[in-house]
Image (cartoon, rainbow, N blue to C red; front, side):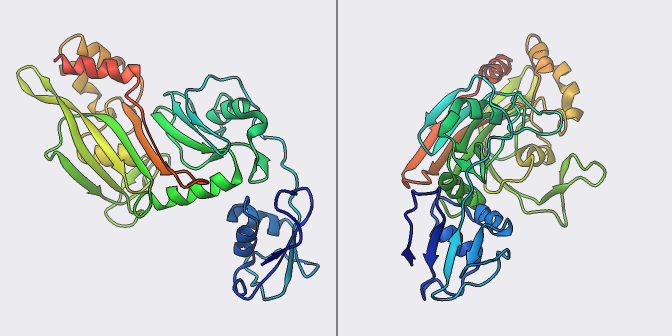
Length: 339
């Protein structure tokens, strides 16, 4: 491949000649590989939008095959202003460099603007915090969200600040740590105690048949979901079996509500889960005070993303972060531990 412009000169059209080794590739794959800061999804969007030409002819079909000695020209438009507005929302920043930022998300913070949450989200906070250090991810100056936490789940998240970091992180999260370096572990306070100290829940998950806003395990159909669990602690109940336990959950897949659905399917739902553990709310009344009041008043699912590890998408260096349970979960653990 030979360059006719330098990659840093992003305001000018970028051109590359297809060499024999690249011949036969899809156009979007070639563009994504030839122009380092662009992800394949961004390359596809540029092609569909008419920003790519082959031998001076505009091509809008991403699947189009490139041939040796063809000249591919890409006009990269300047990033548009961020669609969501920046807002001065406090962030607990664990790590930050020019490519990514790792934050410890508090419970109650929605990750991305959506219906009912047009503002006050993590994305709004990051746009304000990062300012001009954000590049045009996907053509828009905004953080690159590669994974999410539910509104009422706390813990570690990594967010891309550049297209290059976005593509690299997305690849690792797509693999879910099966063959790559990604590590994700959560801590959950659940009702009861599992039969085994360590177990693997390998049960498909799909949309609930009678409520499309919920997920459920599927004995047939659904998407494969794998959660590895390990018992960390059990909390005794006076005169009876342990009432609750603290469990570490390591994800091998990343389905919506995966941990909450899987744990509920084993008969040990997350304490405070209003969707998948509501049938266990009455169990709080069997606890002695003050644990009964603390558990009954707990306002969210007791789930925390406690460990996040990955390879830096630009340098390749391994990075690993840990976060202890936040204060609200710590008070809940102390109350259960005092039973």
